[in-house]
Image (cartoon, rainbow, N blue to C red; front, top):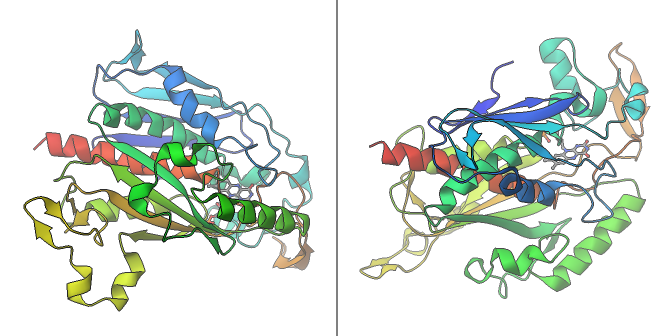
Length: 356
Ligand SMILES: Cc1cc2nc3c(=O)[nH]c(=O)nc-3n(C[C@H](O)[C@H](O)[C@H](O)COP(=O)(O)O)c2cc1C
């Protein structure tokens, strides 16, 4: 199974299944001399763990990271950094009943069709658990980017159709500190309350919800991104689309550009800088030096308690109601994962630009 790595100079590989003994990541290409301890990684992993809201998975993993290689005396050595996360809270019993049944919306059907064998316990490699390894690797990239004054942060702008007040909460006014205290990492307290109520209502009905996460990069220098196939926006879209439940990626004005005229969509330039940012910080695949602004559309979690029509491995029709420990929405746990993927892409392009 190839396709487990991302990046050209800063390269991240993840490994492990949801109910296997452990999961983790290998980071290659990180320059030597960067400060890196387990606690630098742990603080990011703690943000992804379940438990912020009642609607998150009851599976309680410690997510305690071990650095197995690549550092010495708290600094990177330039050799591969191996990150290890033990799966300590595994309960595969709920999957025994559905081991031959394909869950609608999940990877069961496609993994089985592709490989003829699949680890049915907890979604195997297609599980949200795999994203812990991404967050651990993203923390390494973050240590590198912070040396260059770059910051990546993300927050919820919509959940279950409830949208933040965009007149009050514009991109430029939102910071990591503004959203840190909210359970859903949402900048609009009124919208967040309505989202939490809706999540609880939907959880009780045995269903799930999707939403939108916005990601902002501050302090990015101009010039990052490689024409033509490794454009910054192309690499960011790929990295974000590789996260389970992400079904769409927008940059800047996104799909709204299709309704604009050229004079509305172009960002006028002055000697003091750009007057707007419809481009989302990227032109011709290269960063402009403005904030990079992305949005991802997140689908509802596929494993739901409501009855659903499906089929099994033997070719029978089945009505399925899923038990077990599942999130009701990938939000807010997906937020540090989005940050990690963007951070990894930026670290890679930063090193590529330095190599020119
Ligand atoms: C942070 C996170 C948590 C997730 N939790 C669950 C879960 O509890 N149950 C579930 O069925 N899917 C969960 N998923 C979603 C599946 O991993 C995903 O829907 C599946 O791999 C199919 O991929 P696709 O949605 O991209 O088509 C989660 C995803 C993420 C990113």
